[in-house]
Length: 109
Picture 1: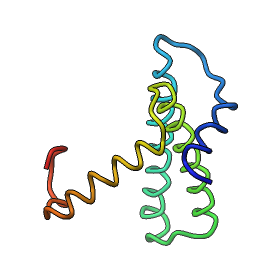
Picture 2: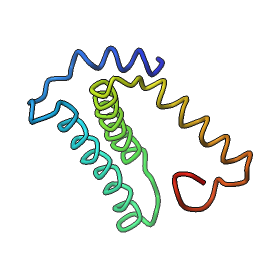
Picture 3: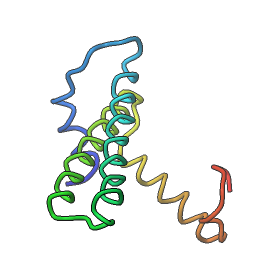
Picture 4: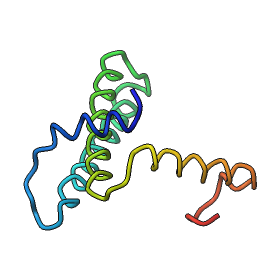
């Protein structure tokens, strides 16, 4: 499956409240789900000596799917395709790599 197919198909399941601008709810959901991923990873290191079990991997896959869903809805509300986001990000990263600027701080390095 490609990003645009996912974005289009996932839109059929996008039922959420209108709270101000339509981008607010999916953006808050994105941050929440990303936090859940981080929490599960934290617990792997706190409770499991850094060992990611098959069960944890499946739980992370589910949470990452939720991140993807909210990202897709946020993009849709902004009229940006997931393909555009992926292509733009890869172009940026490859440019940084070519210039020896992968590491470091700042958006415009």
